[in-house]
Amino acid sequence: MADEEEISWPYTNAPCLGIRLKAGDGEEYPLGLDNEELVMIDTGYDGELCLPGYLYEELGFNMWEEPEPDEFGLADGSSICLKAAQGYILIPKLTLDPFHVRVHSACEEDQDTDEIIIGVKFIKRFKLLLDGPATKVSVLL
Image 1 (cartoon, rainbow, N blue to C red):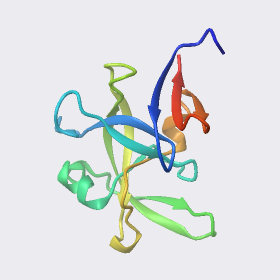
Image 2 (image 1 turned 120 degrees about the vertical axis):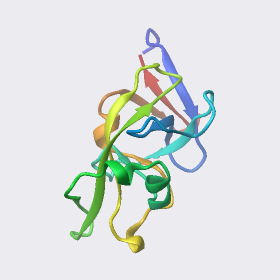
Image 3 (image 1 turned 135 degrees about the horizontal axis):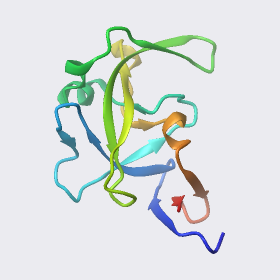
Image 4 (image 1 turned 60 degrees about the vertical axis):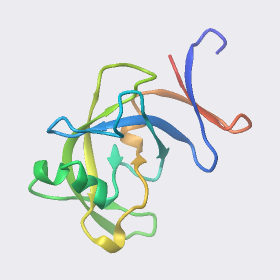
């Protein structure tokens, strides 16, 4: 592994990646070209990207929404309905090219998330190293 280059992000409570979001109309979050948002990696979420409802609407994903929501199974056997739209994730430390993703947000307010979540379908694109003692996540190149 010493031969591999890596790009890393420190974390405190949960493993995360530094990303930027881009909506269908070109609006980006966070604002400022050099800014990135540290986003939690959740291996229990099978999708690519899940946003809190306020951010989903603020970035206009509701204007590009798919006609039918997606349904995801939860660990307790129940399911959750998630609105879906197309968008992009940018990882400035890694590449200038955006990654096309399916963006989700809860259909019901009482099932909404407080955080931006990166799921399994997105992280499968990368070789990740979770270094617990160093409290960092690295993408190995």
